Length: 186
Image 1 (cartoon, rainbow, N blue to C red):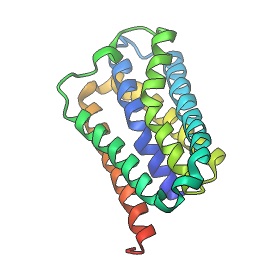
Image 2 (image 1 turned 180 degrees about the horizontal axis):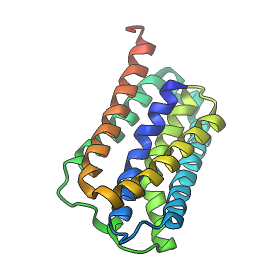
Image 3 (image 1 turned 135 degrees about the vertical axis):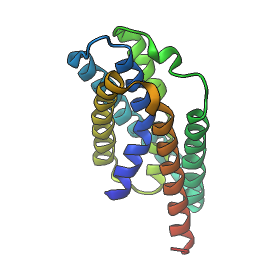
């Protein structure tokens, strides 16, 4: 459960960073918009691992001997991408528009949850109980996204890069732990 919570926190950092930007552009904190943003990000972050898990089960018999390598690779790639983005000079980009455009919000929710799809594939190989895992990841993402809106409104975008750096690092560490566990090193 501890590892799942860490994965949930790591996966939610993209959504957290976008929520920071959304909060940054609110002249006054709009709690209703914050809840809608949190629910959208949390819902997609919960659904994507379910989809990935279903896909992973289709291919499980072909790569079960290599599942720990697949988990290590997917989590490593996702984590490295998040770390790379943490050093980007782009700021918030498209995610910093003011207001609450539902279409844009849904696109952002999908974009920030694609990595959860890959993690869902990994969960299928590792025999993780998917429903509680997906609910935990979605709940963590919703909570951190709401906090991101509030913090963004209060403190600005200074934490966006740090959030992505921490999230990416956590995913890489968890991927390495999975690999080392399966290889019998730890």
